[in-house]
Length: 197
Length: 423
Ligand SMILES: Cc1ncc(COP(=O)(O)O)c(C=O)c1O
Image (cartoon, rainbow over all chains, first blue to last red; front, side, top):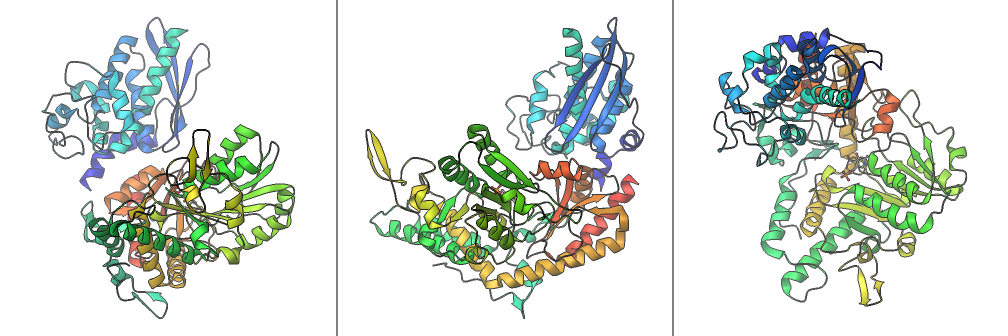
């Protein structure tokens, strides 16, 4: 069951069992954003409190599978107290990691050739970003959508992601990518709405 | 005719010989995630015996031409095969007039949409009542919601009781003044099989017609439209060993005659002028464009295969396997495993919607997948029912002719592994 161990790392199960920053924040002053995965009924609500360009507080509500819940929990721990610019950069980095053609990360992690979609596209040399031209049948819509704003020139460095790197095994399970990115997209939406206010 | 007679009858004394009939299904020659393939998702789509695949191949290799009365030999053969398929379907569901009452569609969903767009739009008026049940598949909900948006219908809902059976207590009241009762013949989530005949008698007494969504029941039990007394029956080929891309609408001839056509185009007309058209006779009136010919041939082969097994033997097999699964899962997991559906195998089909501890259905399905066990996690296109059950999703295992007790045991073992992982 090596595949499963890649997906359900201990850190993920830990965040699933004991999610960090669960709860709500009063709105206003906090901003509330809601994300929904119609495929599995998963639902995440992200509350963000922004003060002077700092994401000073975050809370997560909703329900879902271990991947969506642990991703939300890990995210909340990673972004809390960070300047918005860093939060935005982290969202991009995380979503790049979740893009199934992001083979550089996988090869650094030493298991490049296994996951569906990673080795399938002969044009995708390690480090290459094959984006809109993807023809992999495994590429799911969200992953493709997610790529639109996930463009940055440098390959993802798993070190920079810290505990979040535990989620990289998800890319081998294409239908679960949406679960992992749900809270991140919801956070981005919350930040946009907070900025527009 | 079918070039490949069905394999020697894979049953003895009314009991399916699963080990033997499984050899008819090429897919079981492969593994899944390196394990024995345990396919428990036939409620979503079933697998295909060689007889179906070969019938379709043979058609493509020897007799393919468009239907609609070409004069050359190939076209004649294609016409014959297509007509034979219609007769086979009619025979299978007990149609009084197969050559007029069996309409080929794309799937069960299209069949219901056909009824809503033609009979519904033609016969229903603002304020008319349509009775549905809360265990319907979206295929038998959304077309009525769309029509309700368009012309303003009153939708009433039959509900389930705490045994997951349809609560018929309010039926008299609900059908009072109703024009249509649209009900699933078997729930794809709960397995519940409602008493269709009783519902139909009550509906008819109130002056309503009855549409049965047979997508789940028709593959698993003998369904006789005359015995049930229903007016419309919708089902899909791909859940009954046949190919995707073909579905069936059976309807009473008198209703079909009165309904306007569905899609417009070739085949469905008798005459076309600049200022109008005259619709063709039944059944072509409802089959615009080139139909799914090879798929009809495949469906006919699937029906032959099922008839060879005997639908009573198929139903008995389902029943016994469901009873075994209910008992063995209960014994092994007790209250930690919740089955959303009747706890006895009577009056229910071979569909088990599982909730194991508080493990999310997607996580459960993922762990099961690594053991080669294919189940479906999700809302199963039955969101009103999911709301009623108070869950976003379930993990659903469903059985068919090629499943046996070893498959149920593999399911149980994989569930236990999930329990350990998420402990
Ligand atoms: C009860 C029921 N009705 C309708 C359908 C729709 O079938 P199809 O998708 O083949 O149109 C299904 C299939 O999932 C079903 O289970």
